[in-house]
Image 1 (tube, rainbow, N blue to C red):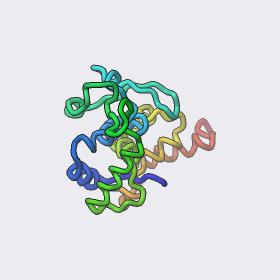
Image 2: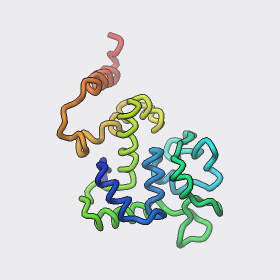
Image 3: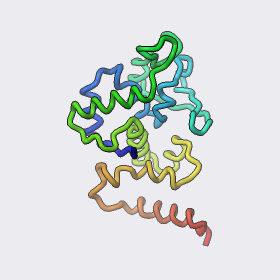
Length: 189
């Protein structure tokens, strides 16, 4: 299933309909851009003064992701896992459990279920970071090697989100031209 961008109202509805504990893994993903599998596998010891220290399961890359003080206060500070499994002692919550919670929440608040997944939070993070700090910041935060991959995330709102019906901004067009030229290997011509 392809995840989709969720707009501000959808995110707000999901937050309001959920308990803080149930929404917390999604909130971490929203604030950091981490994949949900990496979020649920975080240990209490991974939360340090400078942020969350992690190693991506998909890429093997290490990183440090900042979280807000408000979110930091909500985190579990006991035991091994930030998100312990409620069913299996000594294990962490699964990404499937988070996905299931999100689907239930979305259904309860009448959000179209097509494309709603925990990975949607990564897209929301990327779009917001792109708007604030630009394309390079998104590429670095998401640890992408290729601009074409970052493009999918940075511009996720152009298909289904707030900007779907808006014309591209001048800086957006310049970036797209640059990325196309890079993809064609013709940037220096």
